[in-house]
Amino acid sequence: MILKKMICAVAGFLLACGVPVVAQEKGLWRAESSTAQNITGDVAFGGEKMSINFTSFVVAQIRSLEPGEVSAVFDADSSAGGSGNLFRLNIPAAKKFLHKNTLCGTEDVQWMATYVVGRSLKIAFFSGSKMPVFALNEIANSTDLCGTFSYAR
Image 1 (tube, rainbow, N blue to C red):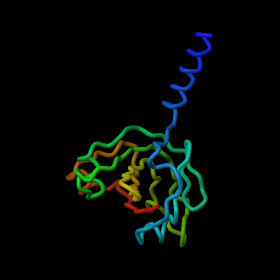
Image 2 (cartoon, one colour; image 1 turned 180 degrees about the vertical axis):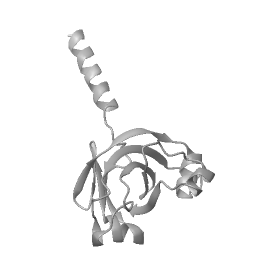
Image 3 (cartoon, helix red, strand yellow; image 1 turned 45 degrees about the horizontal axis):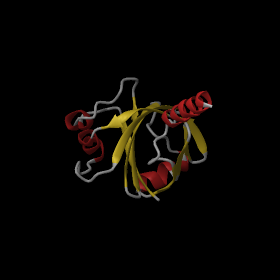
């Protein structure tokens, strides 16, 4: 009986730790900014995937973002609360979305940063194989930042 309880506890722990998309991103988000309305449309997160304009992409959470990093990428007040995450993904440059737009011109999207506060989600997409550096001066001079998009519930 004790062994059965231990196995259930370990299985529950592994399931809880294995959820790659953090709960705050999970679900359907309505395009709010003009860039989101003209390029991605609505987005959805669930399990190990995100969907953009009805096309799914595998995502892997790399780490949480610190408040200063969120502020550098999204021009957000670091004391406003909310949380941010960095994800690894691969969206080919040839993938067309709304109005035949791409996310990053001729570059593949390799990284995605998210910031959720309340009923608002912001996403920044990055190209390049190296992990983005989330410092204000680095973001300002980055050639890998493809764009930022805003969504709401």
